Image (cartoon, rainbow, N blue to C red; front, side, top):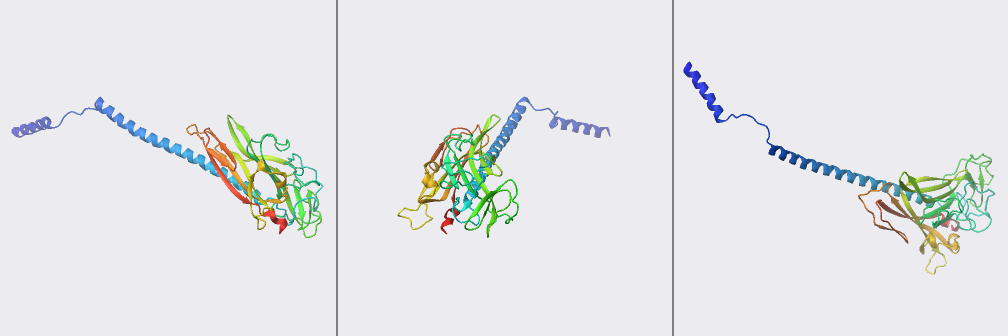
Length: 343
């Protein structure tokens, strides 16, 4: 038995000497190598995170620009499509066939020309469509003093497309103006008893004005699209942020052009600054379409981005040098009601 125990003890000692050593921690060199590898991996992950965040921010900004620009184009185009719509009435609006004894509403803005207020006057051509390029902030006869220079202003009149469920003798709701008309004549009136016109319908009368102004939000200046809308007064409100410039070119059918084979051909697109009184009054010509240009700008700066682009809005070149992102939108709108009194 003693001999067997000694052999076992000897076997354990031999095993210890052959392969089993004491356990130690990492050396300083190994720790440094591990730290370097970890820092490299962390830097890679951080770089991917920063890149994804930057891409997300850019995508969000361009998405906002797309939304604002398309909304502005939609609002302006829809209103222009319905410009000069007078319900059942098919002629040109004027006091010869449309009666109106209304005083100007509170806050009225009067555009260029001698008959370019909210309601038609007894002198000159009543302008249901008019525009101008802003050269001073008080372009609308002093009713607004905050218009952005080099942008355009657009003014139009029409009735809302859906007739009201009112007949002669009914009381029209307070707070709006109305047109009751048939195909040949009509009356513009305010709230009260609906005038009696044979075979007529009642429509809500509208006067819309669009322009750009700049608003200060903290340390940032934000351009906004403003809309003037007629109710019991002509009041203004911002409708879309980030719209920096709007410009319009008016497609004119020169009825005396020798190349014309009939009405409905645009001979030239003319910017607002070059439109004359004769063109606005449709004297020997007719405005039958409008090109709309909208330049949308980001609300906030991106200091990692520099914008030195030149944007072409018809005949107008707009060059920038700042940290705002922009997108340019355009559309051409046919004025379907421009030829109604020729049908």
